[in-house]
Image (cartoon, rainbow, N blue to C red):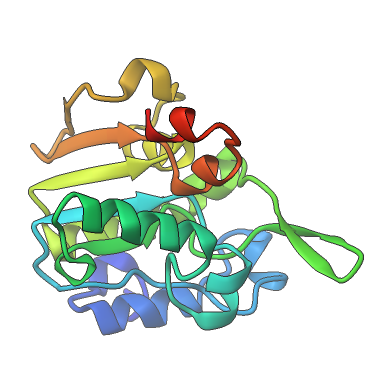
Amino acid sequence: MDANSPEAITSLRQLSAGEQACTRCPLYRDATQAVPGQGPSRATFMLVGEQPGDKEDLAGKPFVGPAGRVLDQALHDAGIARDEAYVTNAVKHFKHEMRGKRRLHKRPNAYEIERCKIWLDAERKLIAPAAIIALGVTAAHSLTGKTVTIGKMRGQPLRLADGTQLFVTVHPSSLLRIEDEADKRY
């Protein structure tokens, strides 16, 4: 068994090393690095986003860009300290396209989500959260194995096969694209 295979991983440090060495899909070629999850090793809940963005790819940490600021505010408003949650992404490498000198986000496809699922599954096994909050359809797809719509799933708790409670909501980046302030609060 390979030391970087998910079955052999017993710590978050080993998990990060495995993710950094991952070549299971082509996304590693254009990303700066894999972006591992961050938070306590026994967090009560886990937040799962889609993939790292440009800022996250450069920093090597999840949710440090504009969507991260929205997430931090939402957690603050809910009375939750970010360092109490484990924050990660369904896909560990930044998928983008170049537009001039800018790297613009490009949604991961089903193949890329599936190839990265072993890392998310390993994180879930190590952290063993009581609840997971899927931020957006990519995270929900990775966790459920199904194509979902936020409108149908939002606010409806699900139980995953291992008993973990799953909640699905919008990704913080989607709120950045809404211009009407009243709609943002919905």
